Length: 608
Ligand code: F6R
Image 1 (cartoon, rainbow, N blue to C red):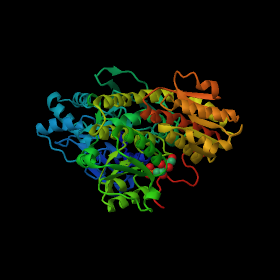
Image 2 (cartoon, rainbow, N blue to C red):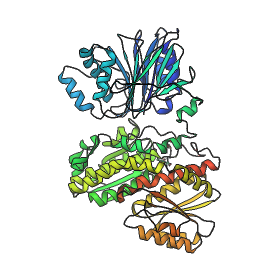
Image 3 (tube, rainbow, N blue to C red):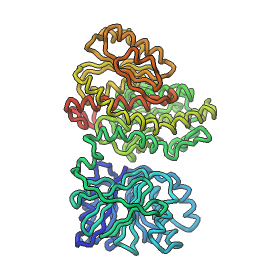
Image 4 (cartoon, helix red, strand yellow):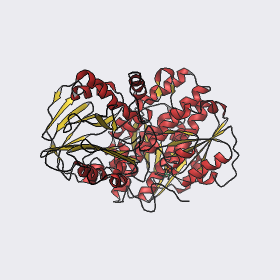
């Protein structure tokens, strides 16, 4: 998730100032590098955020229009050369891009064969070159841009500019948000309305598959097939902070609601349906070594550790490799037995968690193959591990991890396909998993449509001080995660337990004031979880249960039921965790707590 901001005006404002001031309000979208292009003045790029860019911009860097960008790396390290804007070979076309171009390698090869040379490792750089190529034929910027946009596949939010028509900007949207600002003798393009709001409240939201052509006094909206669309600007009442949260009250809710897109982004270009496997650049590099490992140790903390527990079940069942999951803080201080046939896999959203980093360093000292599943490109873990896979979940702002957890599970499923197909998994098994993965975004959308019902449920139970979460097998870690989410943002006592462990202790706590949240989908342990629910009922404990659509048994024994669509057992945590995240969110909101910044916690734990 990057930040885009572009400006064109005929009212005397200095575009460089407008763009630099506006970029600041997009910094929440993550940044590792920043850049600005003004046709009259040139281009400036730098690693770091807006402050670093501002320092490099000289006083005489001025103009009437321009494009600017904050990058949050997906392809290519966060360096100056990979920062945006990118330009065409003849330096006439300039582009800023948010998203992932799926067919960039194919297009890049085609362009190289036509004589183009590339200066960065970024997928985005192919866009200006493609427009340049079409401009040779069409001799018209708008036509060339449309032709190029029709050739790229993937997600994009784009702003582009042509030196030959410097007051014109072209925007396009497919999966990554784009807002057009409509001012007096000025027009804007941005990733959200926050940088536009100091100038105008009139905006046009582009839909997927739409393009906008802007000059200071006019904007036209088109479909990718060039048909015109009539869209009147709307007046928004949000302030800048609300705009950053997409109109939601908290980042946590925005991030939970992003789950369908996150799953698509994490899988983009990586799932090979017809072969029942996955293509993960990071693992390709160590493919031979991975064939030789006889054990995996997953090291992580908190929510990432719980994703690791699901990964253990996936990899052992479908790849047949023994897996252990260890709290990174434990692993680093005991004397783990590790050798060169062990892969130590770190899972970390931030890539900076000190305990996880130290666990990787310890594994390296012992000659293990070190791998990472990390969301933040260029973070310390990604620089120190041997190889790894990025989540592509976009920056997570809320302290409580939600969308990163979902993407960690998706990467683990993709890794399972990769490792499994290297070993005992048949093509038919691989294809079934791949097909089910592909259906997840649609099923997540259906779950999120139920948001209101979960809000009502959270309100109903919000006076309770204690909660037990139960789950079994693949959904045991989901129960642990449900409890962790509730305690970290609601400050109440919540315990997660394996449903089979109930009678070994926790059952003693249950009475009419101690509710249980049971995760009971239709899987191989469904009956076992049902019987745990019955044990709770027999002690008069209130029960909320999550089960699969079409179930008729759970409602007979639970007080409240949440239904989720069916999927295969190994992928069910990806669906089941979402209602638990929403439950925790609305529970904390009902208590009036600071959901995004829970007390005593930090987003990135870089101390012991
Ligand atoms: C819980 C949460 C934490 C993190 C943990 C690891 O919602 O966010 O438990 O999961 O601090 O952080 P990363 O993944 O950055 O290593």
